[in-house]
Amino acid sequence: MNQSVDRFGLSCALVTPFHEDGSLDLARLTPHVRWCLDNGCDSVTLFGTTGEGPLLGMVARDQVIGAVKGAGVDFSKNVVGGVIAVSLHDAVDQANQLLNAGARALLVAPPYYFKGVSDDGLFNWYSSFINKLGDRARNVILYHIPSVTSVPLSIELIGRLYKAFPKVITGVKDSAGDWNYSQKLLAAHRNDFAVLIGDERVLAQAVRDGGQGAISGMANLVPGRLRNIIYKGQDDAALVEMVNEVLKYPVTPAVKALVSYKAGDKSWLTVRAPLLPISAADTAHLGGFFDRVFAEKAA
Image (tube, rainbow, N blue to C red; front, side):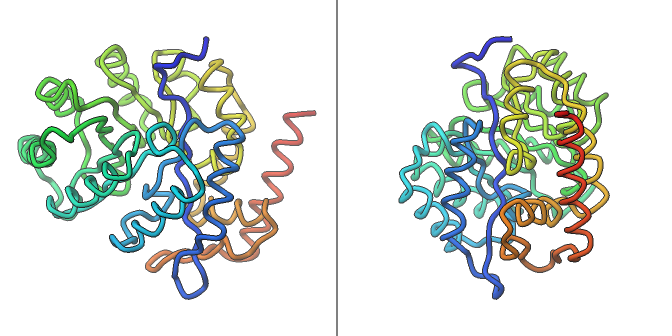
């Protein structure tokens, strides 16, 4: 499997550092962005689930964008931005903010407050979103993460949106953790757009079946290993074990705990309410598990 300039590749679902009072810690943010890009990531994804994106207002988003731009990161190549909102107008504002910054792509979640909505309703929302962006609409990655939103994107809906907006819909991030769904998505659309897998445990098989990469929380920790999976189709048993262990905890606090452990810096543990950090004991357990599983597999 050879690297292609057309392949989406690896994007880090970037964690967002905060001070103890919940304010942004930009001094820790930008070195971490640079570390991810220097160690195997093709891009970073700001304001996603792992980045606590829905908990950041427009001012905070502006501050993050400004800091990352100020660090010399090329948004057109190296930054994907999350659009996660219930209000159509808020979603459009978030998208325009990212487009103004020159972001490579938009990762767009469905409106998530009302549950049990129909495909027709979701089609209308996404269509209105794209139409309100007008000629600026580009590189939209649909975000399927029903464990968080409780609003799944059916294969049929995705196909309908792609047929309606073939020059705008360029990918789907599948974070359902349902291999049956992933297989159906790949079979239906691997030749149409970038199918990106959020569950690192099945990423190698997905890439071998035509997937183009991942937006991955584990890329905050082991981007090189993930790059080998995406560009070489290599299985990684150690990574699978690590993900299984992380999934025993709330995922975003657990990933931040591992970043904190690796950096030797407790500041990374801080999350924004209503999330809570995991305990010191659990952080130590995850850190020890990380050291052990990767050392064992490397031996």
